[in-house]
Image 1 (cartoon, rainbow, N blue to C red):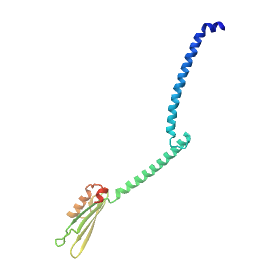
Image 2 (image 1 turned 90 degrees about the vertical axis):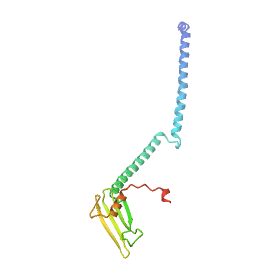
Image 3 (image 1 turned 45 degrees about the horizontal axis):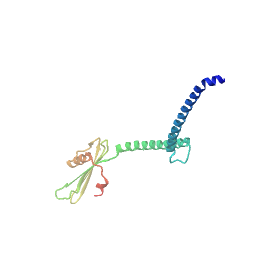
Image 4 (image 1 turned 90 degrees about the horizontal axis):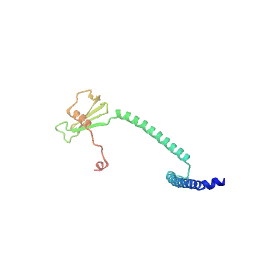
Length: 173
């Protein structure tokens, strides 16, 4: 045994030294890797009360479920509102005019109100010196059930024009 050690001793020492250097390099690499992972873990755990990752994931899943429930509820409400909006009388046009020569101030008017389907009504008020007359005409699918005056047609046209949405600056003027 002594003869083998004398003969191969330097080679065994060199192999041992090489393995020690490789292992030392692996340890240094693992230390850097551990520091990087530790930094990421600290970032992940920032703002928590030291819970474990399972608790954090459970909490996240509960929050995600609550958000999904709220989104589902909001979608249902939005669908219901969109359905109601189809029949909402939201297109409005008004034309003021002088119905009679002896009455000024544009106190007479034609008011057109209808929905997305073209269903609604036209109301006309004609103001004279001694009286006021009010007429209503039904609109179905964009057609009136009676003949329309020029002012009533103008009110329908005014209702069809796209309007600019009011802003806070314009509302305050």
